[in-house]
Amino acid sequence: MAASSSISTPTWSNPKTSFRVLHSNSSIKPTNYRIGKNSIVSALQTPSIIQIPKQNPVKTSTGAIESPPSSSSSVQQNWNALQKLAAMALDAIEDELKAREKLHPLPKTADPNVQIAGNFSPVPEQPVRHGLPVTGKIPDHIQGVYLRNGANPLFEPTSGHHLFDGDGMIYAVRFENGLASYACRFTETQRLVQERAIGKPVFPKAIGELHGHSGIAKLLLFYARGMCGLIDHTKGIGVANAGLVYFNNRLLAMSEDDLPYHVRITCSGDLKTAGRYDFDGQLESTMIAHPKLDPVTGELFGLSYDVVKKPYLKYFRFSPDGKKSQDVAIDLGIPTMVHDFAITENFVVVPDHQVVFKMSEMITGGSPVVYDKNKVSRFGVLNKYAENGSGIKWVEVPDCFCFHLWNAWEEPGSDEVVVIGSCMTPADSIFNECNEELKSVLSEIRLNLKTGKSTRRQILSPENDVNLEAGMVNKNLLGRKSKFAYLAIAEPWPKVSGFAKVDLSTGETKKFIYGDEKYGGEPLFLPRDGSSGVEDDGHILAFVHDEKVWKSELQIVNAMTMELEATVKLPSRVPYGFHGTFINAKDLATQA
Image (tube, rainbow, N blue to C red; front, side, top):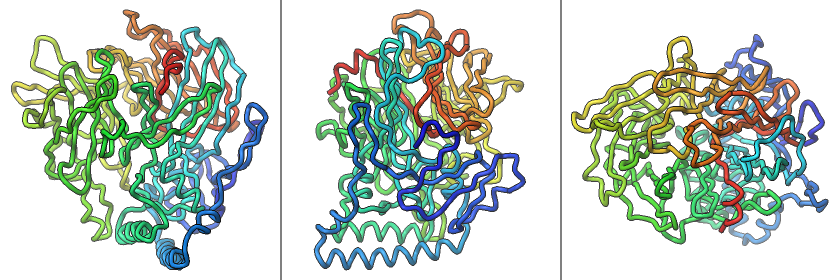
């Protein structure tokens, strides 16, 4: 993709559909979406022609030519005659299924022409580019690599697709002595490797496709391909597109439907997938994408949920050198989405909310991800070193759904645990189409372990009330009382126009807006010095995309003054994405 072009027009790996996307003040309404048309109008995103990019040969920073991924022919040549016949029969069934799907409009939550339009659309891989243009001065303490994860489908969706379904891609900016380089690479999951070898998507998409009778049929097709030896689903089906954590000398890319993937940063600043990582055979289940790294003990805490069999939720931890504890089963009545959780100095805080999994809904034509109005939301508080779940204390917090939790701590001199999170309504609006306006309210939730009662307070004052969704606190205070949180201003939803620095006790809010028609994602707070006694002494890093000129940059903002200090111009577009991390230069040198 030419960086000099003001509007980029890549092409899909298997081009079929072109996208025409209009600005939000267009008179065209979102209800005009239909899959299967040659030209689809979207009123939600920016003006552009959007297509899936081909992974064409490109020059690396050394001048060498990188070849595109291998074609499907070599894989099919290894199939025997029965396998080839089976593949043809299953493909024919799938084509008929998709033809029937196209007779009906998709909901916006599963329509690829909504979910990955504008700058939510994918980009090709970018080998390392050094010596990037910098406006201003990169602060001296920023030495290392800033990484952010995101969903970047390799192939054009041929049916339902949700933003969360895309293949994982990591976008990385490396800093060294005031200079910056950039690269972005797919995380080479088993799913991506097999689909790329076959030449088309064959793994079912958990949110966009698995609903109703067609979802059941696609699951059967998937397992039929496995039984015929056309694919191997025993090595994981995840996309590794959500979270990133650096632990025990390894960068781990994560999504809650699989094991983590270990990704190495090369000496040049490039990214190379080492493989699916089970902590040397210790982890036998999936792991959610938001593990918690205790800044004091160096331990990593995690959860795993199951949508089919009990226990529906398991808790575990890893010592600083990677030794895993035994699983602790947490008793949930029904399979529940637990996307995030929190830790304190002594406890783990687990949400048990109203977004649940009911696979039986597919039989009646619905989505298995549903809002259970009869369930009462609650939080469970368990000792971090408990050997079983019998000691968990549940505190009800009615009508509360926090997709993300920013911090938690034990309030001194009381029996309360304080939880900071963004309460989202409608709770299932990310997954199911809803006409109600989405709200994400930054909230302080107090759980009294003695009385079993809770209170909830909206932190922002009414005049500062905005949707705050993705972000963090100073990582050195995770699990301890923190004064500030740095959170994305998720407006106009689902875009992010800037970030807010919020005083969690007073609600005082300072906002930084990325610029006219500039939008970004999750802000990352990088402390200047781990030993500094000033909590907000550091900088905010955020990828930002200029929708006027269709170019992307990295903005570096002083967290104390809330002023822009440096901008790194990037050689290719960075789509809006998910969560990130920073690895300092010292840790980079000790990678496994």
